[in-house]
Image 1: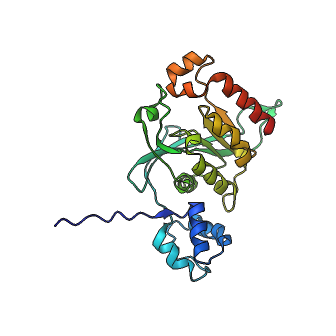
Image 2 (image 1 turned 135 degrees about the vertical axis):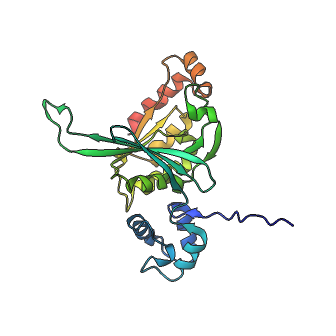
Image 3 (image 1 turned 90 degrees about the horizontal axis):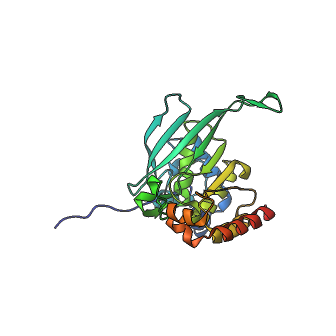
Length: 266
């Protein structure tokens, strides 16, 4: 008789909704969550059962259902000028997604005729899905087809991995996948990023979409102050459909009306 492999999976400690729910079931206040995250971020080798000063009921729960990180950096490749680092991140299920750290010097160039203030800053480009169902003809991810959505924790873990390489000031959702097709996880991940202990400003986060109209209509309510970028691909609907077959579901006229309404509400 052949024994089966242990396929037990854990949730990421950064899956905010799951963590909050499980803590409440155990009688532990969710107010401990930012403290738990801070301990994990500051201590790469942290063990959940060794985090100090938690209620006793928290320890068996955290150890049995959660992991500090469910993903790992499979490889990291630097560009020749050392300004870009591409991270290949391996998820718990074995799938691979990419995240890219982009560094730039804000002192380069001028603003109002004067040297720009600041210094080196880093932007992180994150993925929201494994594969994508939009089918854009020019996109390598689109050619994969849709595989799976990332959990909010898997999205946030990309920020955790990157922050251990370079301090991250901005986050752009321009990696693998269509972010608005993974709406719930996207919203939850950004709420985590903008709260303690990450404290990213919503103005420093940009979500790029091909134009998922129904999701754009509620984005300003769920994520006020966020930056939205739209990839039109072409200014003519017929050409858009050739480049991105899914554009048939999002006519250009309706999309532009939706974007104008979005601007009024932000």
